[in-house]
Image (cartoon, rainbow, N blue to C red; front, side):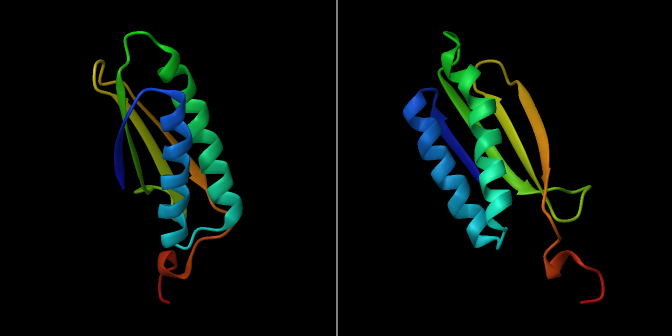
Length: 100
């Protein structure tokens, strides 16, 4: 999932709601959804306070390296800065387990 938003505090709350909806669709546990929302706020807060940042792009995807983890990537349109934080789940979903 990818979302591009203006860099303001209202968009942080909206982005957190979009992230939660996406993770519910992926059958992530509530604890992982809450952790991801906190990471999103922590990553976006400083970006939205920076005078030279006008928008940001946020990507949520399954981690390609850690089964059962979600990767959060943030970049800004002006600087192309990117941060990635894998957020592991308490247990992987059945579709991540080999042989099931």
